[in-house]
Image (cartoon, rainbow, N blue to C red; front, side):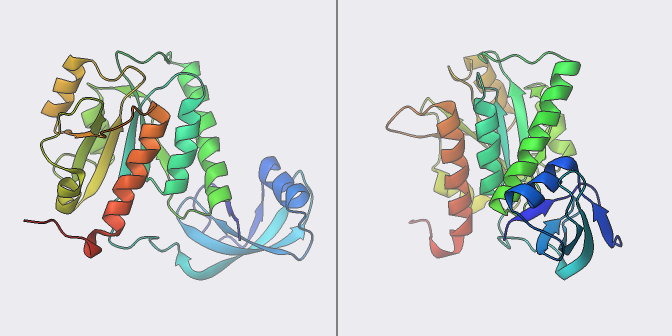
Length: 262
């Protein structure tokens, strides 16, 4: 069953009026009516069984009953949290990457402005508007995919501001493995070797079209990012991001079933 995503912490609330977008989706798209049941999850991870009391497509009202378990369980117990740092690609590619990262179960997404980024975000209203748009995309992707990982989107930063932002979000170098997927074979170990050592979170960094400037690469390595090279074909940035996330998550999920050869 698809799950509706609610804002805030609704624990202790037994009745809720849904916003226009969710109301229309429930009443018009899913064609639910008075008395019908559906599930919902709030921003704190609480899950609810909802029964429709008023099926208005503009302001649907439903009763909320805590679902069994109340707090959404970890979909993959024992797997480290995964964060994506994505250098801004041109056009609408970032939105595609964001949507698919949510479906994969990424915990945090950090947009990054680098020297070779074609896309440029101006401070002020443009950044605010883009952030609101990205929050909406996350909500839609969570509802469509049923993922129980509450993906967070952060403000766009540059490389110099990135370390503090990661640390403030509990991805400091002492608690997370930093990986940079690079177009040049700079790797000193394999992805398997790095993932075998991951005891905390994992941060995956993917560059823009044109890759990273050599000085940026050196700075990122000084910050603790370990280079990973995907040999073979040249991947577009949006392909590289999803490939990297899916590969890292699969290795972490199946870590107990594989071992490194001596």
